[in-house]
Image (tube, rainbow, N blue to C red; front, side, top):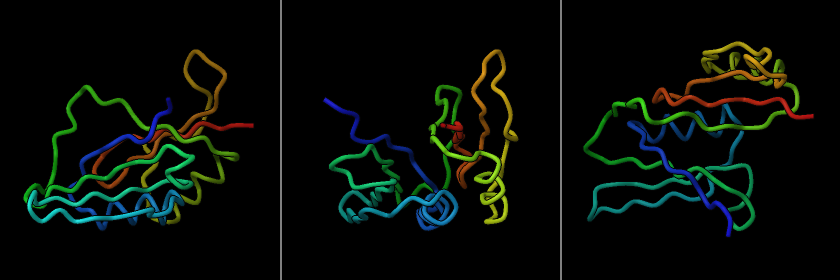
Length: 127
């Protein structure tokens, strides 16, 4: 068994795809409209779906935004140089919601960025 993907609902699919591809450097792997159900699915990730866990962006055509609620935590992405990555995200128009630094009560260096729908994405510096 392995984790295939995680799904989040997005209000503006084109803006979400732009964020995950241009700002976070993922690749749009596939996108398909489902006219009968009035929704579109787009899959983004850092590698093909056969070998990597990816993100499914679900856009329901008649819904422009979602209440994130208090149950969702965050997505996490490992990065090499967290300070350089955050600078690149900022320069590309992304919003760093927690600047890079040591994790509270731990040793990991982390930062948080918000996507265009407000989802939290944790960046974790990896050696």
